[in-house]
Amino acid sequence: MKSTLLAALLTTAALPALAVTQGEVVETYAAIAEAKYADSLATAQALQTAVDALIAAPSAEALDAAKAAWLAARVPYQQTEVYRFGNAIVDDWEGRVNAWPLDEGLIDYVDPSYGQSEENALSTLNVVATPKFTIAGTEVDATEITPALIKDTLQEADGIEANVASGYHAIEFMLWGQDLNGTKPGAGARPYTDYRQDEGCTGGNCDRRAAYLKAATDLLVADLEEMAANWAVAGAARVAVTEDPAKGVQAILTGMGSLSYGEQAGERMKLGLMLNDPEEEHDCFSDNTHNSHFYDGLGIQNVYLGRYARPDGSVISGPSLSELVADKDGALDMQLKAELEGSVAALAALKAAADGGFAYDQMLEAGNKEGEALIMGAVTALVTQTASIERAVTVLGLTPTGFEGSDSLDNPSAVFQ
Figure: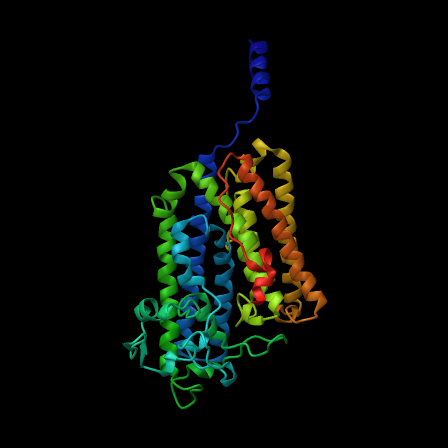
């Protein structure tokens, strides 16, 4: 009896571990999405509370608290960006919450040197100071600034993408104001008195400025509530990615490759370096771009590994794309994991330099070799891992669909035309 039991145990031990399935991998991917958007919502609600406190009792401390809440809200949200490109529901929605760059003069006062854009007649409209105006021949009554006004009338007004009126970056501008330091250190320096409701008001129209900040923050929370629901059990985004596991895996790889290559390495990093233009920073008002870049890169890595560390310290994990690739080509999996680790390390080096006082603005300055090396180190790492992501598509027997590109990478001469 004992020998029979021992033989059975030995036979069981010799069996290979069951390979993960595509269905299990996309379930992990969806569970991580649910957690990331829930965390994005929770931190946006904390921002909402801080904004309400600032409006109720403006002070330097209240403004600093609202800024800190905005910065904290960016950490989980940036890690969701890897869900773009492969998920239509996210793509159709994303512009409402994270569009950039923006012609901030649409919203509030700007420095006179800002000037009127030749391409955008609304670039200096200043809705905060203008209760009634005309867009594309239609008169708009903005006496009351509401989430609906921002969403339905101002966002991409007159069909111009630079008319960003909602989302994180509109709120960022309302908290920090313009960064007028160019490629020198320093973020925007909006005074808290821009929100005082008495004779101490600066910038004029403090009541309407507070109304805009409140409406934009409330709208951000509502938009995140929508996306969090989309990834909850039975939510539309979750169903779309899990009902056909092969298409779900394709979505994961498309999001990873497009964010790695065209979006982050190209549009967000190399383009700004080529133009030496701090206006091309992703978080340009707050000088938080180094963190946005880092958490984008981390988000790419954590969907591949099937693991996400939440702000509260808990971890969501499960069967991963890494395991799926390893089952087909162990060497490719090892290479891609190493490359992802390399890109996160390069972005961490950039982040550490900025946290240490070498601002991303300064890195963009023409002739700044140290800054160029930091940025290009990350760009190169992101481009390198994209090639392995493309190989993973082939190894898994999926149909190559192509990743997002960028002239800065694919046709640099076109950037200056």
